[in-house]
Image (cartoon, rainbow over all chains, first blue to last red; front, side, top):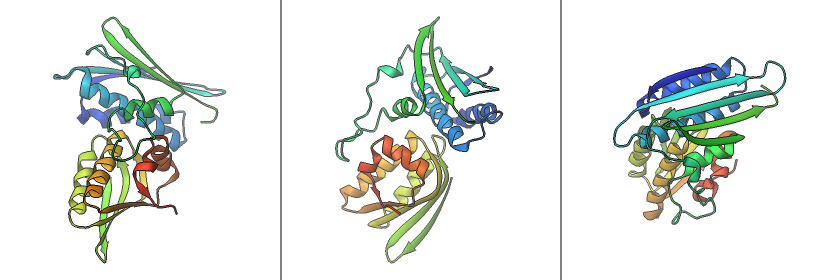
Amino acid sequence: MKEMTLEAKRENLHQVFDFVTGELSKIVSDKKIIRQVKLCVEEIFLNISSYAYQPDTGPAKITVEVEGDDGPVRIVISFSDKGHPFDPLSVGDPDTESDLDERQIGGLGIFLVKTTMDGVNYEYKDGQNILTVEKTLQFS
Amino acid sequence: MDIKETSEGGIIILKVSGEIDGSNVLDFEHTLKHAAERTDRLVLDLENLEYVSSAGLRAFLIIQKEMKKEDHTMTIKHVNEEVMGIFMVTGFVKLLNIEED
């Protein structure tokens, strides 16, 4: 497992991308999968950057685990922050059926995370928000 | 991200390539707005767009709403399979005018 801690702010997004995709590329070669995981990483990291420590900023810790030397590859990524307790899974899904005039702009990020990954789990523990996502691939 | 502009008889075509993410979305939105102010028919060619996150989707939605208010049109062309997957799962296929190839 590899981990990185950095200040949760938008300007650091690409540093997070480089860290996560660097770890993934050691085992996963499918660029489409890498982009899907990257999407989740962006949505979660920017949520933390925008809201967790509002109006201040603070640290986010990201861990990446890619396992599966033989058989299916399992990717587990977790995000921890010490900001305001908030369960992003408590937010309702956006109404994807609504038309242009009614369509609300929020709620898309975590919805994309839920639809892209196999599992998303939230816990508040020791003063930290911990969001863990995972995905299992049959082929890498 | 790279955006190339061409125009054809009053239509402005923006060819967007690369990735739209939270770090460059403001440039994307600004470029679209600037083009939208100069035409009533905007075309976005997304053939080489490889990645879009919710930040990018918001920008599409904002411009689409603004153009519709003026009775102008924004047409999206050549969407690749991956980006189309995101437009579909989020219901954006209903919100945007996406031309089928």
